Image: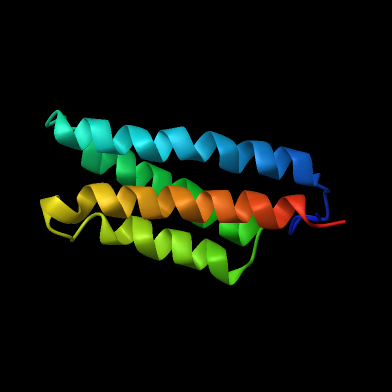
Length: 103
């Protein structure tokens, strides 16, 4: 897959990246449950990173869906946080599946 600078990023690298995002997103749940003071900062940093990736390599509506759902973590009630985390992880898995099906 070509990035905006004309370089090529192979789909295996992208698949690996999104597979690595899943535990990073999941970690936010543990941080929230443990009352970690850096959960908001870690969430914002993750959203910044993913936003940059959207501009750089993977312009797709599902990427925007992932960002929107991560953003929701900053405003939803605490009781909904866990289900929203799992939704974000599912979106990453969908991206991996979509990438795996590209010939």
